[in-house]
Length: 274
Image 1 (cartoon, rainbow, N blue to C red):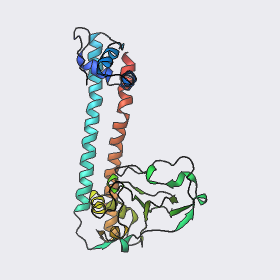
Image 2 (cartoon, rainbow, N blue to C red):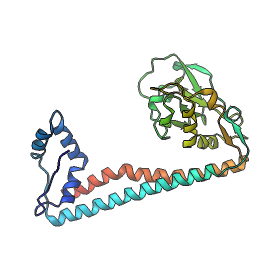
Image 3 (spheres, helix red, strand yellow):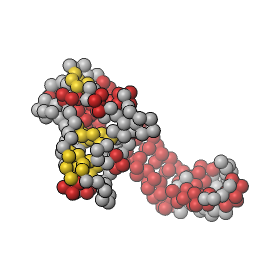
Image 4 (tube, rainbow, N blue to C red):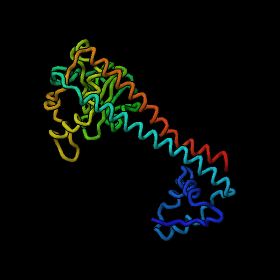
């Protein structure tokens, strides 16, 4: 750790922080730090040149960057509130429940990898942590037999369940054997999206971890997973719940986009003045 103290007569401390925390200068500092000890790093950082506009311009930059930071904070609070509202809604259900084995048993049909488009292949590696879905598979998988999945199936990574990798399929394809495929036993009684939302709760992943197998690379116990119980209201009530959760998820998506775009917004501010 190093300490940088600015000459406040020429450069405001907050402006210096904004500059050094920008992607460009973070990369420059990272490049300078490679292979350096603390003493050498202090010397090399001291040689980095940064723009020093007039104080009034520095103040303007600080003010506009602060607005972006405020939007980030507001977006994070929005995400927390929406996620809390979703959990409150789902946890409040007290209808009669049933097991996954009855509601949405595993789909286990094996198909050949050559039978699918490579971009529809799902493995634990292209499933995102914390229930954020998937990214497209790239390349070719060196595997012959895979599990078929269909539109509106629910895919869950069974390796390291605590990573909370789950996806609601919006297409058909195939997945590795380490990915579980659950399919509604009767879509007129058990809405697939409703089941997905009930399985996206932290309590479900905690349940899987309670009966996990293995230490270094834990896996869920398939028999116990099928014993998991979820409440089953009427199809009409399931649809109402799905619609409400989708409404909240739309707000979460907008808030995440605000956070994702913040870095480029800050860079736009810097580019405008420097």
